[in-house]
Amino acid sequence: MIQKNISIIVAIAENFAIGKNNDLLFHLPNDLKHFKEITSGHTIIMGRNTLLSLPKWPLPNRRHIVITDKKDDVFAGCETVFSIDEAIEKVKNEDEAFIIGGGMIYKQFFPIAGKLYLTLVHKPFDADVFFPEIHYSEWKEISRKDFKDEKNGFEYSYLNLERK
Ligand SMILES: NC(=O)c1ccc[n+]([C@@H]2O[C@H](COP(=O)([O-])OP(=O)(O)OC[C@H]3O[C@@H](n4cnc5c(N)ncnc54)[C@H](OP(=O)(O)O)[C@@H]3O)[C@@H](O)[C@H]2O)c1
Image (cartoon, rainbow, N blue to C red; front, side):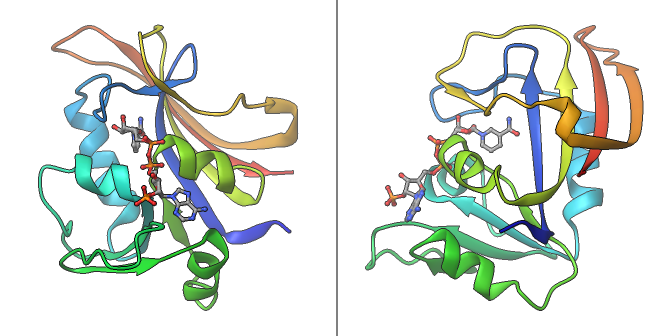
């Protein structure tokens, strides 16, 4: 069932690539600010690999929910859950909670998320983790802004979509 209060936020290359060697594919300082603006004050839900890929955690001013199968692991400042249903249950009274990755977690939440906040980098990247293919006919465009990164020259867009 579609969960209207669950949104996905993700940075995707042209070939749907999102990560390599448990790290991001590109460094876009504006996108980090954009991520902070959108997710601050909200719950962020992530897989264990994504948590471990962060330089440090918890990120300020956000409730962290980490999905893992490892019942004994404890992550400072984070709540752990052992299934996606348990994560959904934990945020059921919140207006909007964000799925922040990575590949395994996006794949499971993509069919049920109500909104997508995409950073689309208009260039392919070599990767070992990919986002599921997006069929744009199933989504309504809420907003789109196009940019060019001053430092590395990448063209990218912020695209906010809502499920039709
Ligand atoms: N471009 C972006 O916006 C973006 C955002 C976030 C991450 N990334 C990238 O994505 C990559 C990481 O993605 P990933 O697919 O390797 O890992 P992930 O989705 O972050 O985490 C996977 C782990 O989550 C746990 N898990 C997943 N589904 C579960 C379920 N149904 N029940 C219980 N536990 C579950 C398992 O943890 P246990 O092994 O502990 O059981 C699994 O190993 C990195 O390269 C990262 O940089 C990119």
